[in-house]
Image 1 (cartoon, helix red, strand yellow):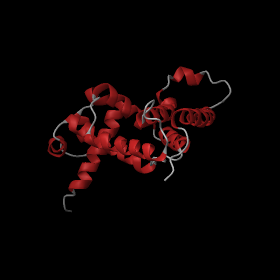
Image 2 (tube, rainbow, N blue to C red):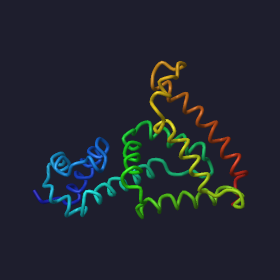
Image 3 (cartoon, one colour):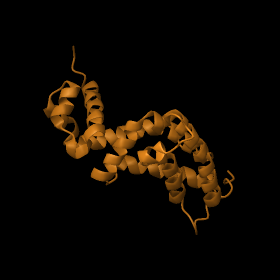
Length: 196
C-alpha cells in the first residue's frame, strides 16, 4: 500500500485535537499524539514543525470546519447566532479548544484573522452601522459572545436553572433567550439593513 501523506497528516490532526482538548498545549504530549495517530512522532515535526505548529494547525482546521458549518448571515445576525450556538452545543470540544487557545496561544494566525476580517466585511456591507459610534467589530463581538455564552458560562449557573429538568431543556431555554438578546443588541447597534 502506498504511503498517503494527507491521510497521515489528518490522523495527526485528529489525534492532536483529542489530546489538546483534554490537556491543552502545555499538557499535551507529542508521544501520546503519535501513539493515537499510530505513527512516528518524528513525523509530527516533519509535518508541523513543532507542537505549537500542530496546535495552530488544529485550531485553523477547527475554525475552518465551523466557518463551513455556520457561514455568517450578516443580514440575519440573530439567525447566525442561533446557528453558531447550536453548532457549539453539538461540538463542546470546540469551546474547550478555544479556551486553551486563549490561555496558551493568544496570538492570532493568519487564517483566523482572515476569517474574522471576512465576517466584519459582511456585517459592514449588510448593516447601517453609525461608524462614529460603533464598528462592525462591536457587533461581531456581541453576537459571537452571546452565542458562546452557554459554552463559556460557569456550570454552577446552569445548574441553578430549576425550570428545566435536563441539559436539553436548559439549552432550549437559553436558545430562546439568545434570539431575544441578539435581536435587541443588533437593533441597538446596527439600525436598519443597508440597501444594496
